[in-house]
Length: 473
Image (cartoon, rainbow, N blue to C red; front, side, top):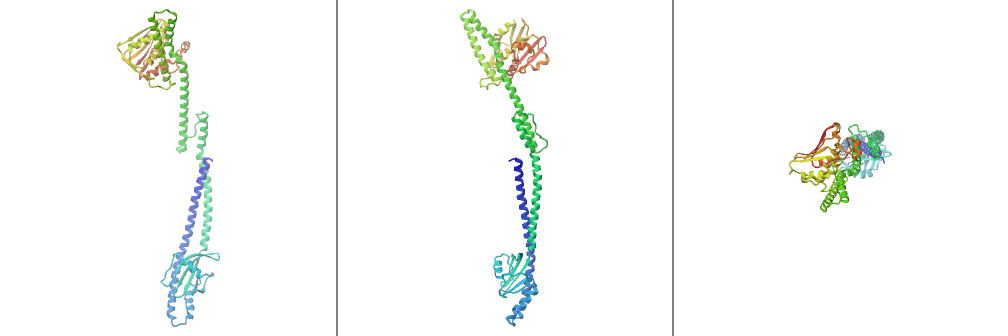
């Protein structure tokens, strides 16, 4: 069942129960209050009449002491008619003596019924007055009052017809019920229309959710206003925006990682060139045992370093989960480090007959960094310098306590490209880089490694003259 229908029926039932309870209670209270008012008024009159009647019968008793007992009924009846007129019934010794009403009462049964009532009208120890009580006689509803005098042997019954009150209460019940029912119908219509308007955004949310499940994130639900549903709509729009950003981010990461796998060979090209060179030398040149051992040790060391470097590169690009030893900075003697870099890049330099001038001041300079990763950084910087340099030119590799610098004297980098060269896949000279197998990942990886060390990269260039890349450590 739809939420709109559930809320509508539940609310309507609650309104129906509450309104029914209110109008039933109101009708009941009105009826009881009306009867209570009549009872108070009639009881007061009844008590007054009883007192008058007893006064008259008391005088008559004093006067009839010498009279015959046969005169007693006439005396009591006479006093009764003077006081009650034609609105009561008189019983003497259990027999009806005078009835001024249109009803007949069973005085014995009436006395038994009245005896069970809590409201007692006492007029002395010789009286057994009770009242009032409600009784149905001849289709009429009567409020009965009963009084009896034990010594005198008489009973009096009087009544008040409250049929009109009962009928009015019934009429009020139906009128109030009809009004309540009409009010509920009107309120139900208003409630349904209001709920339909209120829940309309939920329908929009459902449709938007289906679109999101299909990969459509540009759909926006209405979120105007300060209502809770408007806030839900705004939150939903914010959520879809974030999901879209996350999906795009994951897509970019996925694309980058796939291309990084394909370009990992680019990072391994320089050291692999040296390894292949040593292997070819071992195969084609007759070397002394000492030189053979040196070449084999170099190949073994480089293979181990490449194995470590490849794993660190994969972890750095996010393809593998980083292990505890993936980044392992240590105190490194910088001068020896630069010599190792020069030995690794020597084959690349020989391709264009470029000289590499290495300077380290002071010679005993020591810095803390991950040697495998920083070798990758420096070889990348020198490789870029080789690409930009003319044949038979030179490159400067310099280390000081403040920075590590690679400087070439080639074609340089245009000013508008300086801020973009560290972006993945960005290449200043695309045709030249593609022809040489580059995908524009060198400086991007260098930037990540440098940031991992909390170092800073700075690139300065004078187009047509020189380019200086500095790592501040």
